[in-house]
Length: 308
Image (cartoon, rainbow, N blue to C red; front, side):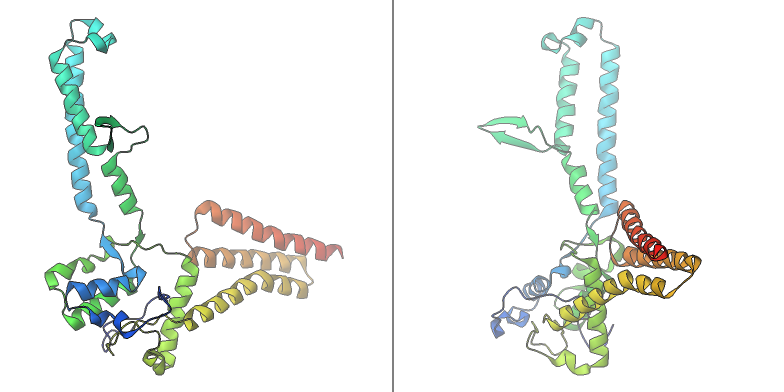
C-alpha cells in the first residue's frame, strides 16, 4: 500500500453512482473542511465508517441493568411484606400505594429501553417493541468491521490535506472499534478486486494517471471507479472456481489407484473449504454443507470411474 506520495491508498473498486460525471462532481468543488471530507466519504461507500463505542455502551448497559435490579429487589420486598394477599391476586383492587408508585418507576425504567408509539393521543406499547438500547447496541455490534485499507486511506487524506482538526479526526485511529455502515457484498469478489487493483498500480504506474473515472482533481488522490478492475477480478474468480471444481476430477481420472484418488479427494476438499472460509464469511453449517456436497460429487465420480 503506497501511503507516502498519495493521500489515498489503494482500496476496493467502486462504481460511480452516475455515468455522466463532470468537473463539478469532483470532491474539490466543496470547501475545505467537513464539506470536502463529507464529499470524499460519500464518493466511496466503504468510507462510511463509525466508532461502535463499545466501552461506553457496556457502561450504560451496566447502569441500566443495575437500576432495574434495584427496582426489582424493592418490588420483591413490598410483595413479601404485603399483609393483604388479595391485593397480590387482583391488581384492579390493589391499594398498596408504595407498590403502585414503584411499578410506575419500573415502567419508566423499562420505557427507557422500550420503543413506544403514540396513536390518536394515547400512549401504548407496541406489541412487537424491543429493548431499544440493547437492540441498537446489537445492530451496531453486528456491523462489519472496517477494512484497514479504508481507514488508512482516510487517514492519509486527512494527514495530506489537513482539512479536519486532529482531535476531531482521531476517531479513525480506534481501529478495533471502527465499523462500516456500507454492506460488504460479495466478500470474495471484494478481496479479489482489492488484490487486482494493488497489483495493477504496482506493475503499471500509468494506471493511477487514468483520470477518466477519477473522482478527484488532486493528483495525490486516487479514486478509480472504472470497469477494468471488476472485470479482471470476476475472471479470476471464475477461473478459481472452475479450477477447484474440475481439477480434482481431472487428476482422479489420470490416477488408476483407488487409494490415490481418495487421497486426492481428501486434499481437494480441505483446500476447497480452506479457500471458502478465507474468502467468504461462511458460517460453520454452510461450510459443512459445502464440504459434504463437494466431497460427495468427487466420491460419486470415483465410484463411477471404478465401475467402468
